[in-house]
Amino acid sequence: MVHLAAALPFAIDFNPKTTALIIIDMQRDFVEPGGFGETLGNDVSLLQAIVPTTARLIALCRAHGLPVIHTRECHKPDLSDLPAAKRDRGAPSLRIGDPGPMGRILVAGEDGADIIPEVYPIAGELVIDKPGKGAFYATGLSTHLENLGTKTLIFAGVTTEVCVQTTMREANDRGFDSLLIEDATESYFPAFKTATLDMIRAQGAIVGWTATCAELEDALND
Ligand code: TIU
Image (cartoon, rainbow, N blue to C red):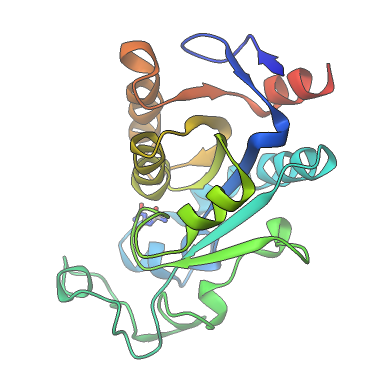
């Protein structure tokens, strides 16, 4: 067992053999200019700060033999998995499915929907395309984790309060212990990131735990 004493709100113990890393939506559409994130009016450069730490976290988990799972929020080219309520929400500069500088916005197979090179999956790692915010919704993630015998999930990626938090809440209801790596997740809204970290660990880890990448590194290498 690994004892991560520095985790908040209190120590978490986990078995690396039943733990997996899930990297949420580190796609060009969220992190680079011209993609979905920017069409919503966001400053996407804010997300680039976590790229080196996320790469370090992935390397750490690979070195310790933890399965690494990557997700991509995207829709089928015929948009049959895109509810009108999602497509028509708000007043983005381009809607999901519209052509943009990195291909059609948030559509599977387009350049924008792909994962940024710095944290790209390697052969053998599962990549899950998901139509929703939560990675368990309308995907094979539950079955895959059951097959692996996973009990604990380590989370990173973007954005903290949208797809990361939604997936952590889904995981919580499915009986997983979840640990969010604070410096490998980011929001377009710094205050939302802070609030999300607080609400995850409040009330005795009501959703899960948080720790830094260095703290996880120390615990795994102990
Ligand atoms: N807009 C925003 O903050 N996030 C999303 O739309 N999706 C994810 O978080 N991946």
